[in-house]
Length: 345
Image (cartoon, rainbow, N blue to C red; front, side, top):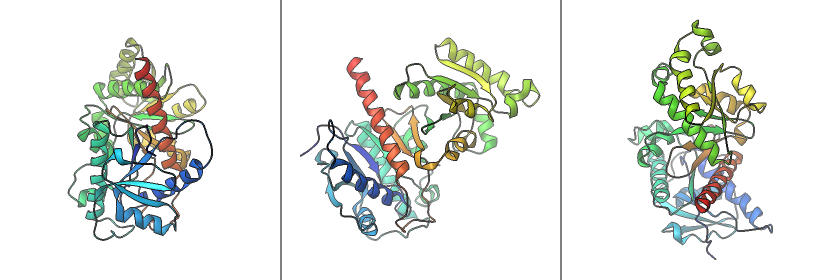
């Protein structure tokens, strides 16, 4: 029996990494959950990827799950114990596990591209992406530094931002995948405003009525009154003031070495961090199993696990699907909030 709810599309990730394995484990756990009586209809899910790769993942895990190939998202039955796979590629041979290679890069990209097309055209409720490898993408001829840039380009989004979240803190990045030197140059006034606005919208999407947003400084001690840099007084503070004039509950700049402790203690809902490691280290330190990446600014929902392809353990059947499960839960939460907004809008 087909679901009346649009499915969430889960991309398989890099075939040479742990992506297909954690996707298979995710569905295996859903088999148990779906067998437990509950209220309402469970959120359906389909896999976007390669049938050969996903069958191999099931064999690796000695799983009792059945794989069913579908030609369109609307054909998904989402029956307990079955993985519906919408083919984005048709590999003749399995790529080697744990190694950078062009076929894996292309298959991973093809899955993302198809998932985006489905999301843009309203055929799925959102996207959850398993990890990809940037070097494999490059080997396949794709010049994107990561998922976020692919999503922004193909989703035709002018401004996007990464929100990394777990049970304790949330952070949105002003700059993403670039060198630290380049990040300093990119963290200008428009970038600050974009990140603050997206953080506000992201918090609202998660059901926070008036998100309290702390903006971290770029320099040590948030510049220490100009002793360690002028970016705080010349760029960040004016952006915070402008955001407040727009009705956003923003404050800062706060020293980067203490602002996350304050957020964890409940003073702030979201921290806007200036560059990749400033924002991601605190989230990942608290545990990869519950971390999730949410892309803000897209015309559709996208979440992902907060870890990479783990080439060192790929093909061994020992990868933990917890972060993928959390990413799926966040996608469901965002979809539910969006549907409520549409009904009341």
